[in-house]
Amino acid sequence: MGVSSRLALVGLCIVLSGCHSYYPARVEDVAPQERVRVTVSADQAQELQTVLRGEIRSFSGTLVEPAANGQILLEVPLRTGQAGVSSAPLRNRVRLPIEDIIQVERRQFSRWKTGALLGVVGVAAGYVIYDAFKAETAKPGDGDRGEVDNQRVILFSLPIR
Image 1 (tube, rainbow, N blue to C red):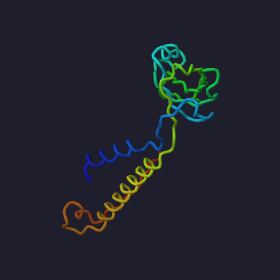
Image 2: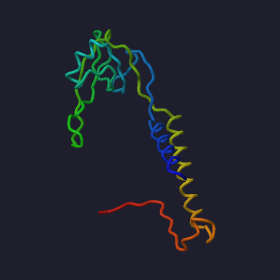
Image 3: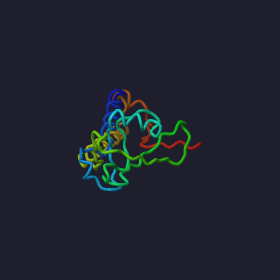
Image 4: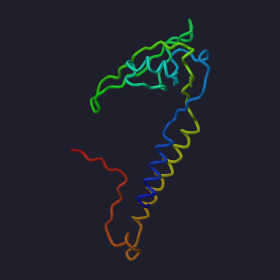
């Protein structure tokens, strides 16, 4: 298996790795504690730029209070300014007027994407194992693989320092 084939396989796995999808919904239909992605108007994005640390029109969060009095309460993750520093995730609650919400999308588990991911990973793992055993059973004179008499099959390696 060539380097380009392996990179294509890794890229495909990354693309399919999301086991969740977002589906459009009405604000009134979203239940509390449900994960959503919200797109807001440009004016509302400007108002939220201090909370979200940037003018972001589309962001994810968890609905805390459903639509009441023309607003929803959403808990959103905050971005930390320091890369590589591990800390507890920070969250903030924001009130959003319903008239400033352009779109609400529910986050739901996608069986198709998860099945596709598991299928691709299974095929890739099967090919790696097949290729390793094919190298193990090669005979001298079969080309590059047969030149080493005592070839080991390494399926997994974990360096410990």
